[in-house]
Picture 1: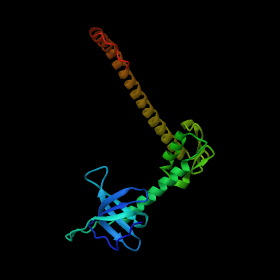
Picture 2: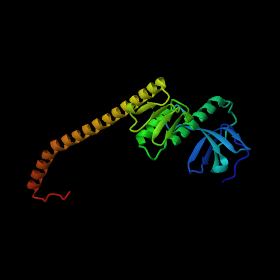
Picture 3: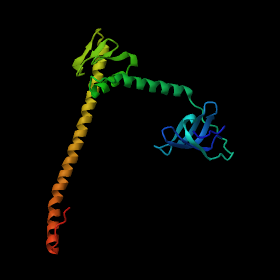
Picture 4: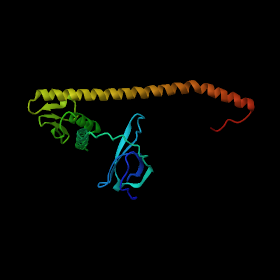
Length: 223
């Protein structure tokens, strides 16, 4: 990697190339020399009103360049990080990834895996699991293929949990059927419109081409 400065002035503009060969340019918010961690505020790719904040490990970056030094009039203190909120977001992200990995099952369909994730969102990651091709909730309710309401069985006579799972399944498949219907309707409409457009324009194009070529006594183009 390129040599790293001993210190980056807050407010300076820095350009870094990450280990993924991605260029990141932004304003320095903070830099820790011991860990080589640099925090940059960059223009958001999605909104002009927002900024993206990158935390870069300069040990894994190359071509670290100071594009513009701070003029020394930078008096605005960087905003304090809400560490508690960061911890919550990290915990939620880890839980989501764990749920996704646990939902993978080579013996069931992608729709069944999506249903698993939908159910798992309402519970802790260790409360929903695969038992073969069956979805097990709290070891009290089992959902077997094809994962419809009639396939929900309570193994502990927990009627309230059983009814709750049934409502979730009903809502899941209602949403799936509506999405499929909308997609099918859109495809049908587009095909009909295209067909109508071709049928209405084909005769006039044919007549125009025929009369034009007849008048000029020139051959019809190959295309």
